[in-house]
Length: 138
Image (cartoon, rainbow, N blue to C red; front, side, top):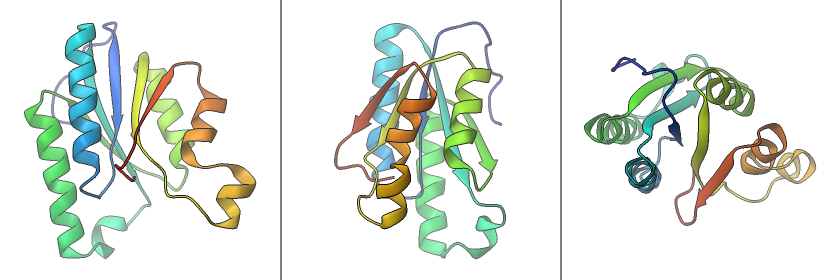
């Protein structure tokens, strides 16, 4: 979206949301990317039409999150999809991601207990390392 993606280079993916906790996810992913000499990628997946229904304060926080990722040199992509896990998996495979950094999912709810939270479902779907940032809810 903002920068040209350098295909073929190792990459680290920060999965970011609308909350302030995503700032820690972005910082952690940037640190790992520097340590490994990898490209930093940032992905936000949201339901189609969410931009028009989002509260102004939430929109402002998401923009701060995206700006931080951009300032730290990330290639940023925003995907409109109801299928968050499938979108992350597809993006990670398409971009040769070696590691995914993600916030701690919210717990509870019968659907999450039945199907598993996003991290659990990601771990089932990809063979890359997934780092969960505690205290940084998605």
